[in-house]
Length: 317
Image 1 (cartoon, rainbow, N blue to C red):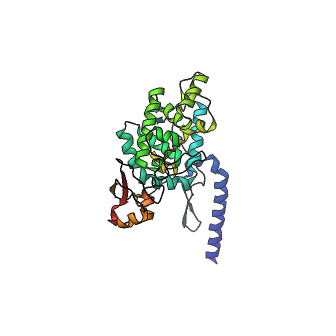
Image 2 (image 1 turned 120 degrees about the horizontal axis):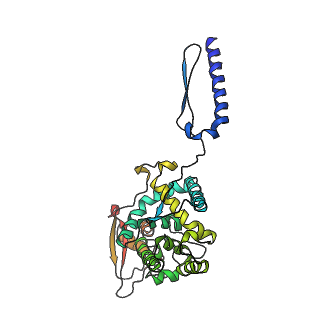
Image 3 (image 1 turned 90 degrees about the horizontal axis):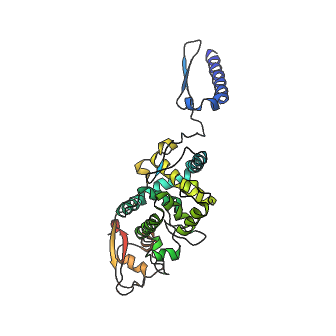
């Protein structure tokens, strides 16, 4: 009987505590994340209640952030609000962010290496995330690949686009082409923030907005919704990737996607059947297309004097 009374007492205490907790939660979120409450019964038994973390958290938005070492004026209310919007949209789209973090481990090393070689600020790797989520997506307008090149622009920056080969899907070559574009934009605008914005709406389009509104700063322009949000989406990726635990993302190294070690096969003559060619080189058609998405057909015609490097995993050699 004593045990039943004690059980009922503890149950009542717990119920009262939960009612108190939910009533006061919104006024004391910051203090409750790790708080514990200890109670002692009349018989001397001690009970400890651990208060669970709230389902929705309000993040401590940084007071200062930069893009390519250029300051973002977060002291301006509309700038702070636009930045916060992208933080919450992306931090609470957990499934997308988790997969992006896993995928980034696979592709960012190649992108970071090329950006460094080309003298482009490292922060532009987050532009690729904003453009494609590090996937070979196709936009409604026909832009393709990690960096979302349109056919004409791709050819302008020395990428091959044909029925059999589309180098917009070639990670290394398209990243080099992007660097060429970014350098051209920087030569015109003189700052990297404007360069990033121009990647979304074009060098000509962004230049016109600067002239029409008689401004020299991206943050002082009134732009279409997409370009207005664009840089802040990039900044949100930067902030979350550089502070993942703060935003609730704690991925272990073993949970990240890994790129295989590749062997490169130089091809300077036609391949009539890529499936047969892959088998001949101890691989298969699926792996060939998975690691060389720029190959768009089941065959490859090689023009005289030209060659291609095809990647296949070392594990199958």
